[in-house]
Amino acid sequence: MTALTTDRLKLVPFTDDHLDGLSALNSDPEVMRYISGRPETRDETVAVIERVKQRWIEFGYSWWSFIEKESGVIIGAGALQNLRRGATASPDRACPLEIGWRLRCDYWNRGLATEAARAIAGFAFNTVLADEIYAVCHPDNVASANVMKRLGMQYAGLQTWYGKNPVTYQVTATLYLK
Image 1 (cartoon, rainbow, N blue to C red):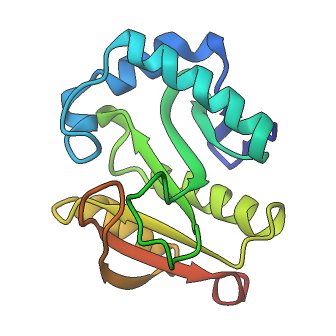
Image 2: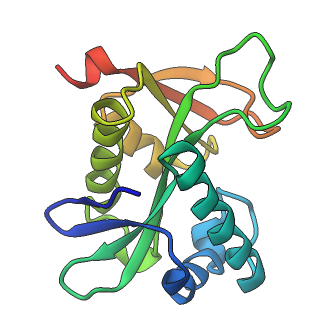
C-alpha cells in the first residue's frame, strides 16, 4: 500500500484508524449530494474501509484518506479504482481506471482536490503504468468537472457508468506526462 504526499496533504490508504474522519466526511449530505445522493451511515463506512483494504491487497491501488499535513485531520478521500463494476459498462469496453475525490465542505475552493488528484494521476501513470485514466461526475457537479479539466482531461461525453449517465473525462498517459 502506497502513501502519497503533496505540498499540503498526505494521502494514506484507508485504515481502521480513519473511521471517524471518513464517517464524518461520508455522512455529510452536501459532500455526498453528487456521489450517492444520500449520506452514508457509519456502518456503511466500516464496510467500505474493509472493502478498500482488500482491494489494496488484490490490485495494489484503491482509496486514500486525504490528511492535511498542518493539522493531521482527514479532510477528504480519493481513489484510483476500476471504473467498471458488474454489468454497468457494456462488455466490449475494456475496464478503465477511474480517479475520484471528495472533500469536506470547509476545505472546498482551495485547490486541494486538484492537488490530490494530480498525485493520484501520477501514481496511476508512473506506478500502475496505466495507459489512460477516466473520471466521472454528476452532470451538475461543475466543481469536479473543473478539477478534471485542470488535470488536462478531455471531455468524453455522457457515458453509462454505475448504472447512471455521468459526465466522463479521460486522459492518456502520453498527454498527461508531457
